Image (cartoon, rainbow, N blue to C red; front, side, top):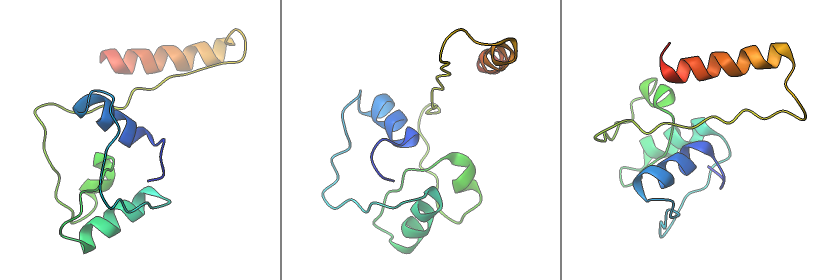
Length: 98
């Protein structure tokens, strides 16, 4: 994907300790479904994608010792409304597994 994507940032943070991926010949695509298409066509390619997208394809998942998660930040302009607060609490509870 183009720079700044959440999947790439999560992988760089978790596996490279915040350093950028330094691929010699990166193939930049516009949307996540293109990552899978390119990776399936080029056996030497290593694509970065969400697990749910990989699971729907014939691409092979590279397993790690533990899951790499995307961290979600919820921001508001000013104090959150009661409805916003419920969304924030629901996201927080989902993270905690409650």
